[in-house]
Image (tube, rainbow, N blue to C red; front, side):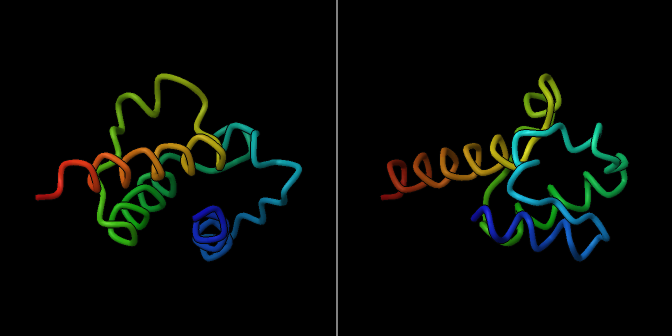
Length: 81
């Protein structure tokens, strides 16, 4: 998961190393258009719906995105018939 996030960031021209996984992506230079592209790509890749408003209530980091994806997948597994 974390690797997928980092790969998608690299595809957009942002090289985020392990030392920056806790850094605010907007503060690291990711603009809002690329953030939406990243979130859309992750939703498609993992078949989830990320809560965008809640995500933007705090700094968006690679770690937070990973946690959110894991959480969404766990909810999906529990609610799957």
